[in-house]
Image 1 (tube, rainbow, N blue to C red):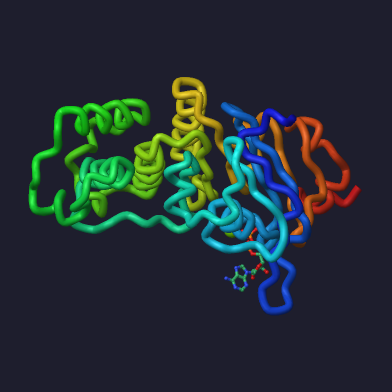
Image 2: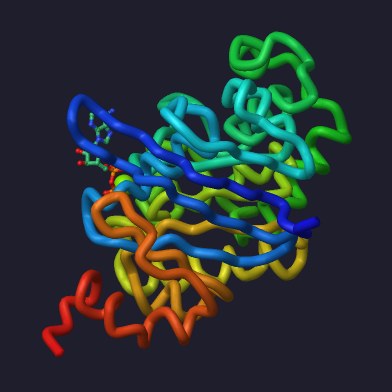
Length: 254
Ligand SMILES: Nc1ncnc2c1ncn2[C@@H]1O[C@H](COP(=O)(O)OP(=O)(O)O)[C@@H](O)[C@H]1O
Ligand SMILES: [Mg+2]
């Protein structure tokens, strides 16, 4: 018996002639920080789509928290504890940071109304506000709570997306290139936030990231995709010094 929180085996996905993923297997343990790296077009986002139910793989199985999730839609997988953020930022104009968190919280607790409810000013309960405040504090966003989302910098916007994903109370957080478009300072801030999420909440993270120093700092284990195939996986240092990985991904010539 494996003690994996997430266990994917033999995941294969084709798009009209392109093999985006070829029999990829991967495990994430409870509370672990894992990463997936690989060149553009390697299949990283497709892997997330297959794991979180956005795409149906042609082959392969995904087991999460002890049960097969292959037949579950993304919302059901989210309720089971799989939360994700997307590569492109997706925040709503006209809503504050706190509104975004309240909507996510109500989606989780299924207290109907959702968006309309928040926008028409139905009052959040003290419990709802407390759950939002705890997440805002964890990510250092307290002073931004009442700001409209569209007024934020990209760095803060990405933290809000992370906050929204945390409102689902996930066991495993899937993050697709959270540092994309961020400067060094914002990337470090994101790294600190992710570390707090793992250490203070015990949430496992699966991170897709092109920023190697960030991965090196955060991830305990790395899987490397190249042309849809898993070419290496293991402890971070071992994988990053693997010659095959250096040639495929880091552009080394020797
Ligand atoms: N919805 C789609 N339809 C057709 N082809 C796709 C689709 N999504 C991804 N692909 C193709 O699959 C391959 C892997 O893409 P992707 O998973 O986005 O890679 P990565 O995230 O590693 O950059 C690419 O060749 C891409 O063009
Ligand atoms: Mg991608």
